[in-house]
Image 1 (cartoon, rainbow, N blue to C red):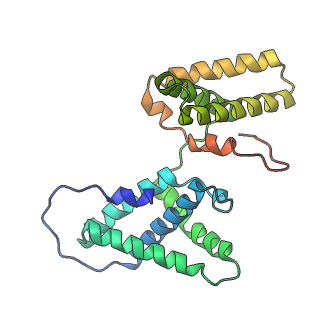
Image 2 (cartoon, rainbow, N blue to C red):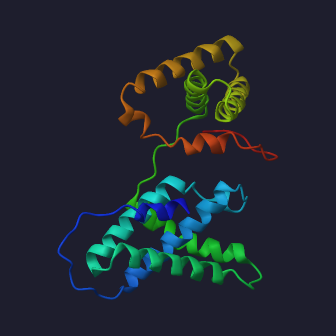
Length: 226
C-alpha cells in the first residue's frame, strides 16, 4: 500500500538506543496507520463505503511517516520492526471485519477513533471551491497536454475538467447568474490560480483531492455547495 511506503526510506545512522516494547499509545497509533492504509486502498478502488471518509492517500501517508518515526525514536525499534508491526496491525484490522454482520460499522468505529488523531497530526488542507477546482483541473489538463498530447492522463484530466466546469456553471445558473457572468467569474478564478502557481507553496496548501471528489458521478439529490 502507498501509505506503507512512508516507512521505506532509510534514515541516517545513529547510535542505537535500547529497544523497548510498544506502549498502548504506540499500538493505537499503528492501528490507525493500518486503518488508514486499508481505507485509502479502498478509496483508490472506488469502493463507495470508503469514499464516505476524507481521502486518505496523502494525509494517511504523512501520518504513517510521522508515527513510524516517532515509534522508532521512542522505542529504539528498527524501521523493519515498525513496518512489520504495521503489517500485523493491518491483519488485525482485516480480521475485525471478518464474519461480522455489519463490517461497515466496525470500520466506522475505527475511523471515529482515528480521524481525530489524524487531524491533530496532519491538519487537513483547505478545500478549494467548485470554481477553483474547475480552473485547477483545466490548467492541469493543459499542462499535461502540452507535455504528452492526448495521453490517457490528459484525457482523464480533460474529462474531469469538463465535468467540473459544467457543474460550476450549473451552480451559478441556479444562483441567477448569466452565462456571461459565469464566464467572467471562472476567468477571474483561473487567473488567480495561475498567479498562485508562481508560488508552489500556495497551490500545495489546497486539497486537490477534493476536486476529484467533486467530479465523481452525481448521486440523486446531490448538489455542489463547495
